[in-house]
Amino acid sequence: MRNGKATYWQLTSLQAFWPGLQVLVGDVSAANLSHREFFHVWERYGVLPERYNEYRAFTSLFF
Image (cartoon, rainbow, N blue to C red):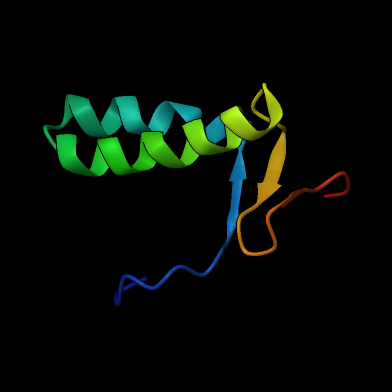
């Protein structure tokens, strides 16, 4: 948490609000990076899956 290293390598569809929130607080460059991650997954599958494992690059069917 304090060193900036990722600890949870998954995107969930409920996290899609995050880039918009980053823009609202003025962190546009970080919002751009966050949005690109979501867009990359959306381009690959045509939809945003409920859960996507970034580390292994696959959708997770089981929680």
